Length: 116
Ligand code: AMP
Ligand code: ZN
Image (tube, rainbow, N blue to C red; front, side, top):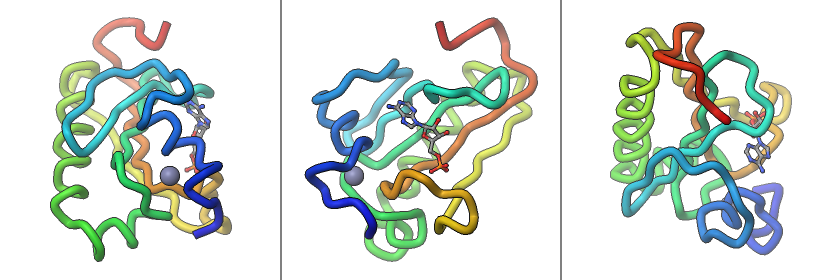
C-alpha cells in the first residue's frame, strides 16, 4: 500500500478530518462527489476502513465490498437515469492515483444537474 494511513486523503475524508461533498453513507462506506468530475455524474464510493485497492478489499473484507457496491448502486440509481458505470482503477499503470480502494460511479445521463 503506497500511502500510510496517516496521510491517506480518503481515510481523512472517511473520518471527517477533511471536507468532502458527501452524497450518502453507511456504517461501512461513504459516497462523495469527485473533486474533478470527468462525466456529468461522477461520485466516488470508498470503504471507511483502509485497503489499498479493490483487490485488497475483496480478499480482506468482502462484506465491505458488497456494502460499497450496494451504496454506489443506490447513489447511481438515485442520481442517474439508470445507466451508469462502476469502475476501479487498480495499480498506478491502470491510472490509480489514490491508494485507498474506491469505485468511480460515472454516468452520462444524470437525473438533474448535480455536484454543486
Ligand atoms: P483514481 O485515479 O482512480 O485513483 O481516482 C482518484 C480520484 O479521486 C480522481 O478522480 C480525483 O479527482 C479524486 N479525488 C482526489 N482528491 C479528492 C478529494 N479531496 N475529494 C474528492 N475527490 C478527490
Ligand atoms: Zn485510506
